Image (cartoon, rainbow, N blue to C red; front, top):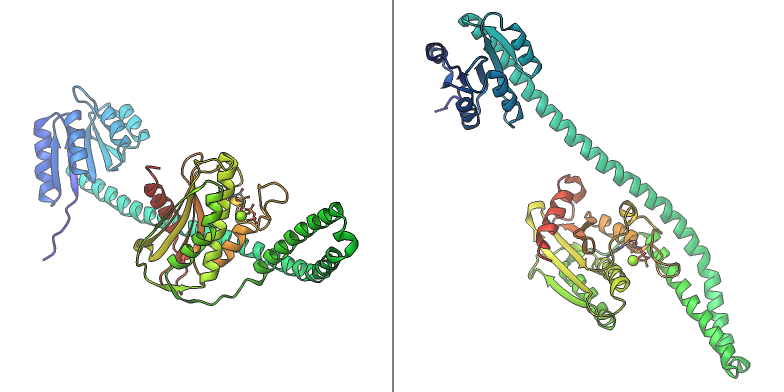
Length: 411
Ligand SMILES: Nc1ncnc2c1ncn2[C@@H]1O[C@H](COP(=O)(O)OP(=O)(O)OP(=O)(O)O)[C@@H](O)[C@H]1O
Ligand SMILES: [Mg+2]
């Protein structure tokens, strides 16, 4: 059995005879009719029943039709409103049309005319609904296009920088190796060994040489795109390994590390060394941000979490810290290669872009959520089914932001 949904009409008029006549006639045509004898009651009924159409008398004691119309237009539900005026009320009727009434009719209301008008209003509502659905679809398509456009741009940027890095890393490797072996020879030279000042200078050169080597290695890692060995593993394992490797350093910096990983997370296809790299990069960045505020004094806290996120069929993991805020105006650049706000010699600006590449290669998404002027979370989400591209899910980023905000609302 199907229950037919009836069209709801609200009649607001202080004249009882007219109200009842309209109600009877409209009910004969199978409309569901509610009546109200003044503006205040009319508004109450309007909020209660959410009518499709309102027949509204203009001249009523107390709140008149124009005021009722004004109030109706402020409410979230939209009905089509017909104004009923006596003879000579054309000016007020025009005022009502300007305020958004669908049409006006003069009293006594001609029922045939009313029937035609109701049909017109209903047709308009159907068209309006179609138009609203169309606009919603267009807005969704537009949002998707924007996300895809940004991804394409980021991918193009990463490819261009990747090619450049590969070239530079390759070209620098040979001379670096030569410098390294020459330095070793110099250090064991008897004259140098006998001169502590000279030896100290050469050791300083060696330190800088090691740093240069690390940068070249990072550029190489970045550019090679590291195809990866994807095996079934829980994301907790590389996160735990990363925390373990880094825990002593955090202690040395007086930073408290809280680990909050969801137990027994199902396995998914990951390259665990790459995901460990992502966790370590997040931890290093959190440490630097905390050092900027606490200068290795107690007070800095890092919290690492992982969780199942069934709403989007993925796992979510992240690193929360209470260090220095993300520098204003840099938000859209953090994942760009070579972008850094750290002093010269401290950061290469490749950490987050390496993470970006890794997470993209896992079909996941990476980002951050700012919570307060200090605390924020850098996160990544990986699909449970590794074939599924999380970025295709346009609601995922706003949902993750809301999820993280809810998780840390008491911090
Ligand atoms: N936890 C964080 N708190 C505040 N700012 C951060 C945080 N993580 C990253 N950032 C900002 O993002 C920038 C880019 O980070 P990224 O890891 O790519 O490079 P880096 O840390 O500067 O250098 P590298 O990681 O190559 O040594 C940082 O310089 C910093 O401004
Ligand atoms: Mg970094």
